Length: 222
Image (cartoon, rainbow, N blue to C red; front, side, top):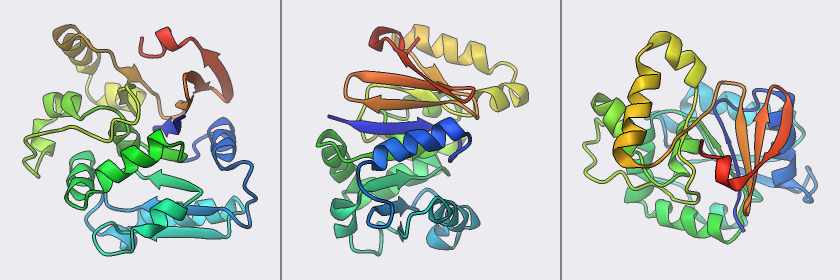
């Protein structure tokens, strides 16, 4: 049974933070092991965003918070982690690094076996089926020249994070996403900076404006 948390920003609201607590429970904070994969940015563990995220999780009361570089570190930490965090950054770079180290398949296997995973921004995108939408919207971002955009595929949910902010910068974005949905026959869940989704098996909960609401599975992608 998959246990996923998908959000635009890390711990952006009390409700998102509470949803993370549900992923960790019933393991106590002083014994839980949180592993943060850092390979969505080229500087990895040294990136200020990664360091800040580690500190944020520690400030929530978790004593064991590890930054993991899949290119150089012992991947056994993924198996022993209580929760794995896939942080934001560059989705194509993250996909390339996970694929080259065979961590993509490992994360899919772990997720389907019930390992809790928190995907933030690019990390949340990669927990879905593919990056096809982003190859369509932002082909210039595929600097890795990936021919295949197949992602972790731990869920069929495709999300677009930071939707509210990106629409302000790119007013044509709503129509572009709608056109892509009509062209492909799939749907995209648009998440604002303060929204998230908590996935527990077939149960989907929308995290919105500080509240967590159960929504029907048939409506989660609308």
